[in-house]
Length: 339
Image: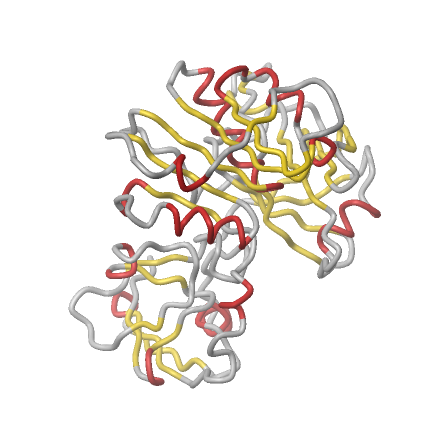
């Protein structure tokens, strides 16, 4: 179940703002890279032993290699240097340079566009713009209706300003400090509550950004149908990250399809316990925000999951569980399906 690992070369490293740097990644021998749909992310292995997932920030630049294989000419990620970085963003900003080779995972998409939508409303807070910019570009190329609302502190803090300007009137920009800087879409005052007050039929909402922004949007969209709201966190909400952290109990993970029962220690995740047995479950963020490790619950099995993720909807939690963080309730049994 392990994803393929690729080697890429950093073709360009470009400072977008004082905090955000873009990295353009290409095949070291000039071949194409695997194609992807907007909303996808890649895992990047960094100097210092770090692995971090980053959203692909631009729509796929499809081309064909001389051997006829179709794929992407490049991957682009936009990385914000976080003051409280655990090492990932600092490593990219300080230790990765043009010409360097990096190992990455193939693109995975747990935050896709939904084809049935008549209109796509994209709300981006800060560096949460990265997956939504790719969505906007893909929709724009396909002639599909969308509105991209971008919330930033100021124009100086706005990454990918040139790409936003190219999308024209489909972009609405809210700046906390509107003064300063020229070019790009004009700044407006965007009232989130008013924007989301009356969901139009067939409109789907996509949001990504810091925890406070996400909370404000979700509160304003509480009356929207669950199936029309799609979100991606970059990190667990602060207030939820420590909730129940001291209450972990050992439990038993049951995999009926393989005929095994796996003991999971109190200080261990289900993913770690499976890995100890040589059963590989793809993971990325390891915090329950990206959805990479989500698997189906076994039908008709006993036991109840204690969901600790931030990627599944209430409806999805009836049939799925994120193995990197969720556990069996009260130290009981949790039955899942793993191919």
